[in-house]
Image: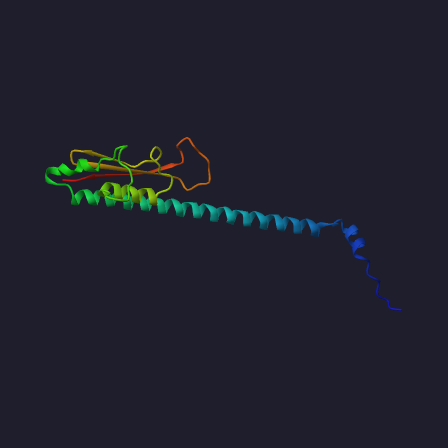
Length: 162
């Protein structure tokens, strides 16, 4: 026989050291930490997508506002007499056939920015002497069902035409 002592089974060793089940607890804690990290990355990705969409709509709104002001500069007439033709009223609607420049622009705004209707988020253009204010509104790119108006975004351009 050999003089080497026999090794005790694993259960006896764990019981003797008081570490029974520690490896299982460590594995569960590792999975928990990993899961929290993955959830954080998913949330970050969702926020990034939402912010990118909001930035796109702000850029579109700036482009559209500058576009109508550019048309006003071209068609301002003598002493800015034609600027009054660009004031949006409730009677101004988007029409595809025989549309004025303002109606064509309104159609493009309705196609580009989300949530624009005849009563909600309708763009406004005001003219005071030689100062033009273009206000564009759109519905925020969120999945919320907010109806109190806090989900409406706004872009305002004030230009002096003389």
